[in-house]
Every structure is written in C-alpha cells, then in structure tokens.
Length: 405
Image (cartoon, rainbow, N blue to C red; front, side, top):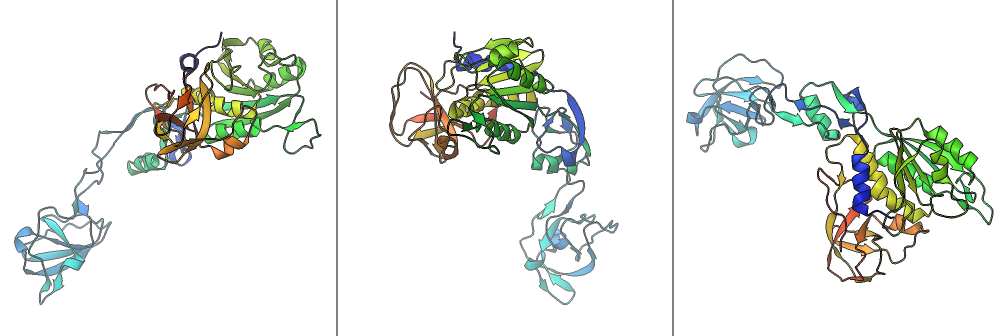
C-alpha cells in the first residue's frame, strides 16, 4: 500500500542519524554543519575605538577652538590622556584615548589659530564604537547544527578560532539502470536514450553539499545490478533511478535484496513517482527513484533532499515551503496528490504548461514546484499556494506541511 508524503518523510527522518564528526580548519569548513556550540571568547570590538577619521574631544569644548596635540592610528598603543581644550587626531579603528567623550569627523571641523574649531552640537559617545557592542564575551555565537557559510566564518575568525568540529558530509553513490540507457559521452542508436537522471542527481547532490560517486549505468539483469549495488556500499546513501516499477525487467529492489535490503516504504501516494522506494542496508540508506526523468528529479527534491538533510546534522533540516499566488487558473485530475513544476518570481507561481513524467524540458524551465491534494480539481488564479524551491535550500527546524490545496 502506498504511504502518504508525510509518512514517507517521517520514515526518512526517524530512520537516519547524523554522520560522524571531524575537525577542520575554518578555511576548509565552508558548507559543513557545525557539531559544537561556539561561545565568544572576547568582546568585539575588544576596546573602545573610533568609528570615523576625526578628532577625539570633550563635550564641554563644543564650539571652541582646541589645540591638536598628536595623532593616533589604528594599531597604535597610545598611553596618553585627553585634556580640556585639546583634541587628538584619530583614525578609524584606533583605540580611544583616556578622557575622550566623543569623536568629531574631520569634515565637521574648521581650522583655527590653535588647531581646529569644533561644532556646537557635540553629543556623548558620538562616533565611538564601544567595547562589546557587536559581540559580548561568553555569548553564544553559533549553535550545533548551524551551517557554516561565509559570514559564519567571519564570526569564527573574529574570535581567533582556527579549527571547528563539524559533521562529515554525506557520501552519495548514484547509478541508473536500463538497457536503453547510454551516457552522454557514448553513441546512441535510434532505440536508445541518453542517461539524464544520473548527471542531474549527481549535480543536485553536489549542490546540497554531498561527496558524490558515480557508479555507472547498469543493464537490466540481476547480475549487473548486484555488481553496481556492491560497488556503492561504501557510501552512506545510494540513489538509483529506474527498475522499481512492476515491469518484466524491473529488478532493482530484488538486486538490493541480496544484500539485506530492509524496505521501509516502496510506494508513495504521489504523481508522478508512485514506485519511489526507501530503505536501509545496515546503516546505508537507499532511495530507489523511478526512471522517468521528471518523476525522478521531483521525487529527489522531496525525498532525496530530506535524506541528505537528515544525515547532515543540520538543525534546520526540514523543507520549508514559501507562500506564493497562482499566476493563472489550473485544472487537475482527482485521485492522487500531484507534483506540479513551475516558476516562482517572488510573488506568483506559474505552472509549466506541459509536464509529464518522462519529460526533461520542464526541469530547466522550473525553479520550484507545488503539491496539490488528491481532492483538488482546480486552483484558481491568485489562490495562495506553497512553493518548494529547487534552486534554494529554504529549511525549518520543524516539519511544515507541504501541500498547497
């Protein structure tokens, strides 16, 4: 019996654990998931410093001509003290001298006999960056499960952190099956097709931060399929396409069975992609996708992406849909929850005019998709729908229902 989309996702998340850990220098940590909390070791800024090129002065010297006694540059260890009716020229980032009450930008003063004439609107702490105003010592900077992007590396570097503990990236093995399939670097006859599924899924797995191995294209025999399965078993996730339906040459699940395949679901109440199968061989996770290109790609976006998120260790690991308005009316056939590819422009979702399980052109046209309810016969123009991006990884710490209507 086919399981619901929600049950399929529940089985994925409850049967997958995060990868083991390793330590990396921050220069190599981009795209990894943190396996530790990061606590600030010191204030940022570590000392009061000037936010402008200007003059360190006292408030009571407003509208006065003051003597400029010296200059301080960023990195100087100045030990002097500012006195009344004096100013110290100071550069951006330089440590504020003792006795300073505000900084006056260079463009706000005029020259006078003694030095510079100050404006009459001085205010306390103006243009002074106070110690700890950005980051305070002992505060939580990053949490276990956060993804390390460029600006997270900024935080780590600001604290002098050189190495971090992270989750290892999932290793994904991919192969397709089908006597009719040839790779793009081979010649095809008039009764053969190019294998588009494996390059597509390989690229998406890489985009999602995985290490990927291409095992090849299997012919539709148990012997060859078992050889491909055996070659893939040193990876964490094995993703296949083709051979999971009920045809005479559909041997994929049987081939995996020789290695102790525990199937957790083998049908999903979804169109396209009903034969999608998920299970495990020990701790290895298996996703068998249908052979039709559009069906394989869209079901990967639901189930393959969820497998990768669940194994990655990231805190925000559930797909997060974005609300959009329908650009036009669309009509549907009742009876099964349907995945509809289309384009989301930031406000409206426009469904692809033509899409069928065996097509590939909608994949290049679309940047998202919606899932409709089995009882939905029509979605009117301007109705609110939930779009799931195939270009960006919007994630949530909690599961959010994905169906639109």
